[in-house]
Image (cartoon, rainbow, N blue to C red; front, top):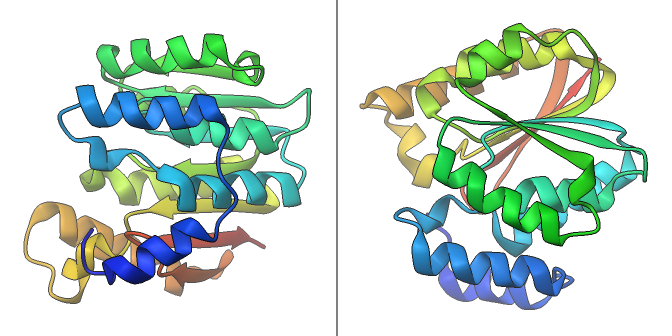
Length: 210
């Protein structure tokens, strides 16, 4: 994710509202203990997720890919007191660390982890959501997107992370990049939605269902 000028990235970071101290601790522990800490959302995108959940008054949020829980907690922070986040995670170690922080947060009671393959979890959902955030294995992005469109209410948001993939989408060559490029192409041609692809961190598709 180093294709954005680091001085510009730091300037944006320094001029974005800070996250709560608990999220700062979660960030540090993720950096210290996880093999791929760059998967964590971080302040810039995390504050954007919180604000978007707040703006649309989200009461039901679907997250595909929990990792260590930073993004789920960010969205829960911006939700109504009766809000609910269902977050899908396949790695038990990720889920265990996330749950520790959920338990320590006043917003953690809003979050429920569904452990197992996300596609199986998604197949069993029947309720509608105000917001869906996709940030999991990239090869399944097209399937995650299609199911999210079905589950998000009209006027709701679908946010798809890593949609610039360090700029590799300009010349897709591996399976992950091809899948990300495919979902970007699907979104721009999808008459059910309108979108903007934001150059936030590694690229964030913001999709509104009509």
